[in-house]
Length: 158
Image (cartoon, rainbow, N blue to C red; front, side):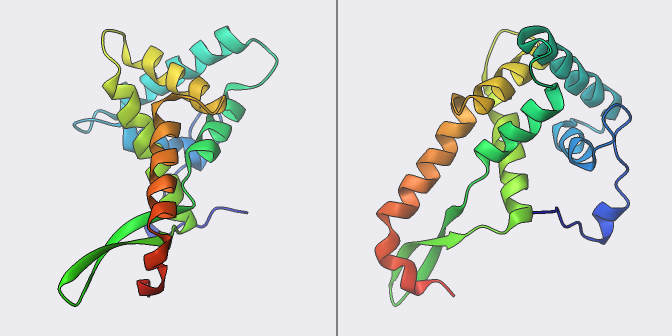
């Protein structure tokens, strides 16, 4: 399914190395305190690390895209207040939000790993997600389990 971008994202330029708007979006999410060049360097160093570890079997961009695909949630939980009670209602996730959540979870998981440079932590998380392992994939699984456990309240979704 092709990605759909809003007006502000249409202005997003593809990155220099891969020509991908998805990479540009990820770099923008990775950026801290407006330091884009640092975020770009961290991302490209992570991709170089993936290339070193995986070899020529698969391109780092493919690992990145597959990792995002493996982390994207299909459903999530929203709190709905009905009567006096609050229910955890499972709802479908829009494609754009799926990508945003996947990026956010991968970055959070990478930042949560301690004691190594960020580009190594990011590369490890990408490769783990590519293999359907790692903290970001675990987060997705937990969200899906919560949605499954609360499917009795799905009729409250609007």
